[in-house]
Image (tube, each protein chain N blue to C red):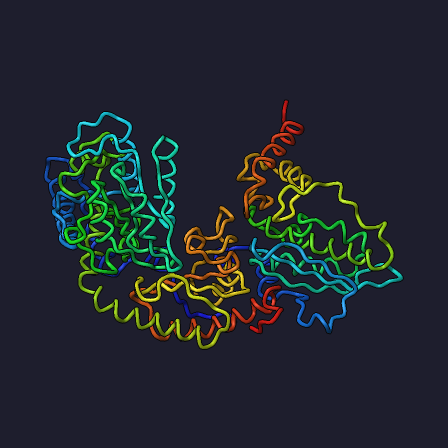
Length: 202
Length: 401
């Protein structure tokens, strides 16, 4: 009955109803680093703050805020729990799929809502490196940004293709690409075709 | 925090079946005959269908022969737009056919079934103009007049908007259109049964309506087609509905629609006052208790039961689902709630910001909405908006939810 009564899984519902580690007082939190990603105009914005144990390079606390939907709230809440206790290197590797897995499941068309949390966390980790004399550790993005509005890269298009996006609409469902100004449509379709040829052409 | 109270404020999406409609439909279930059959079974069914047609026709001021039953309001709208492609691109023998005219005018805030049908016409070579609206959702009259010409074959403009409730002056728009020799269609799915609609007074050529928006069943709609204007069936292959819509008549649905209309006739006027009063209380409750809100749609010239409001800094789908947990059903224009990932095309057309569109909530009241419901909704909205804004990156600045 519970599943009939709610759109998402019990775990999503729990995190949505009782989000963990929401940032209440930014000044009081005294974060060591912060990352912000997305854009209010796009309907999604994510702010992630971390505290770091300098000796062990471990995330000791993590707080967040979002202008986002139920999936964004639940996935960021669960991500904040996952990040605490991890080393910066470990935390950097958390993907939106790890988050979806931790939540039990998300409806397929809502996966894209959970991609901002991990991006904001990576931005915060890079921010920490930048301000603590470890510029060399900042992950050099080999990727190229295709969708300027949402900062979606060619790597993400590749991942989406591997996850089964074979039409532009499916690509949008996976990545949210081109949903703001739409200028990147041609380029992203071209790239999607290239990756489809690369992986699926017999 | 879980509650037993249920408040349904999504009547523009669909309505519960009126108890009288249910009774009439259950009774009609015994009549299974095909209305086209000549034997007694068929004749009994035919009688139900024709009585229903007469009731519906009388309600909108039409002749029964001018009413064609269809599977939905969307089908009625598709039929009209498709008829234009027939008129424009085939040799048509129908009297009054506006053959040779290749231009269509509609608005940017139509229902997707009109917008997509119009886009489809454009792909087939028609020139389609999507006229804009002002901040309240009223059509830009100057732009409309500018697009209108002797080349215009068909105009399709909705009477009442489903998202913001704004009403258009269909009578005047129709008059202007006829002066240029164009045919006029109005999608009145949200209007019929909520405000008085008389096709003779409006002088429209086509009008679409639907059953389930007015406490009737789903899967039934109707199209008014003025006597003498061109018509080509969208669904072909049968003599039903005088050859205008193939397929065995949905007797049950038709009976339900007619009963819903009959009940509207009795309840519409009194309910209008009551629902409008409740909506104004809801609006006032929001204004007085929640900062940073903006109401969308026309402040006065709109459907009595429709209230569309943007809560700045709060995302619509999250608001919707927190309200759902409180037993309150609403809808949102936020991108996150749509499959397309785009915010509402209607709100975007009125020129509001993306942020406002993403934070928009539509509450549509109906015949069973009570004062207690409204008070409960105000109380829960205050709590939910406060909560969503606490989490939000936007409200963390100078705003204090």
